[in-house]
Image (tube, rainbow, N blue to C red; front, side, top):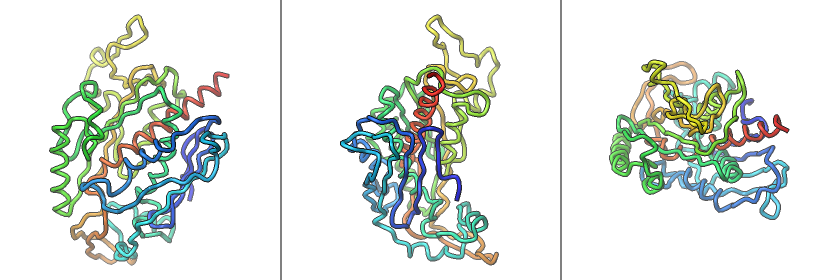
Length: 354
């Protein structure tokens, strides 16, 4: 299966399935001599792991990371960093009912048609459990990007939205509620709604917003490797993501050029930031900000019409442990993928400017 490696210089290759013995990854291109805080990596994993609150899947996984190479005496050596995350709470029997049946809007059908053989346990390789490996790599990248701040937070669950601009939000609130919303009043409404959705046996989507602060000018390459294009690719590679917009996004289409243009001041900054910190595909030193849309989780606890592997029409109902809303656990994944992109482009800049 191709498509399991991300990055140009700082590369992450992941492997493993949701209900296999372990997930794992290999990070290549990591600079040597970086002192790593392993506790920070574990804390990032705790932000993503299942079972952390009543509004996420109750699968119990420690998501503890074991490193096998590339780190010696607490520092990176410059050689490939290999790691494993063991699966300890698989309940594969929860998926026996979909062995020959395809869940609507899930990857079951296309995996079967593409490969002719699939691991149906928890979705196998198509499961969002794969993203645990990305959080490991992102936690390492974040430590290298010590001056660059990456903050993701939930701004929408269903029709419930944060109305404030990110500049007026207190980001210290994000980890103080299970939804990871920076507005504590809206967070309570979101949490109550997700609980109701779960009780109904249904799921709901949402939006995560991310801001990258202190990014230097010059990241991004002309034409096909624009910074926003790579960020878009990174975000759209996350399970359940249906949309990506940066800067003014789709709302910018409603404006005239005279309203949308970002005027420069004598300090090289812009008075507004409709560009979202990126112009011509290259970072301009302003905050980079973007929104990521997540669909409702495909597996629901309600009967749905579908087909089996022989194209017979059947009815099926979801079983097992699933997130009623994926966005609270996806926040650290968005940050991790952002960190991988920014670090990779910083390393590209270093190569080109030598």
